Image 1 (spheres, rainbow, N blue to C red):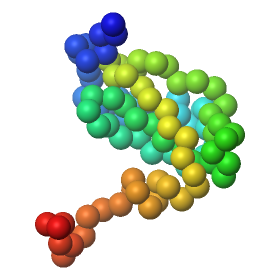
Image 2 (image 1 turned 90 degrees about the horizontal axis):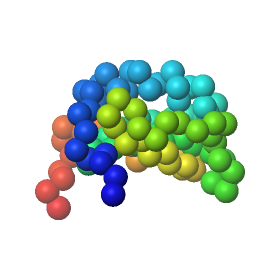
Image 3 (image 1 turned 180 degrees about the vertical axis):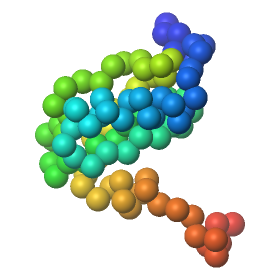
Image 4 (image 1 turned 90 degrees about the vertical axis):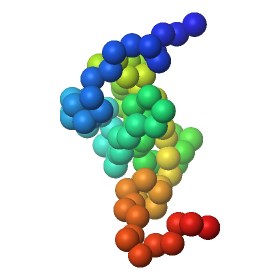
Length: 93
């Protein structure tokens, strides 16, 4: 059983800043880094989702965070991840 959830983690902003140069070195594609539920999620876009956008692997753990790589189609980051909620948006539905 892994112990990823019980390790001391660096603050997300610090981990994101430090892992960004590694991500730049592993993909030429647009990428996005976020956290949800205690993992460091790294997305990279690709024209063909059957072909990996990653030239090399990222570490499995980084500064206490479990790193998960995602392949996503081109345009996914702009459409679903890099979005800001509008102040006038009704999200109560």
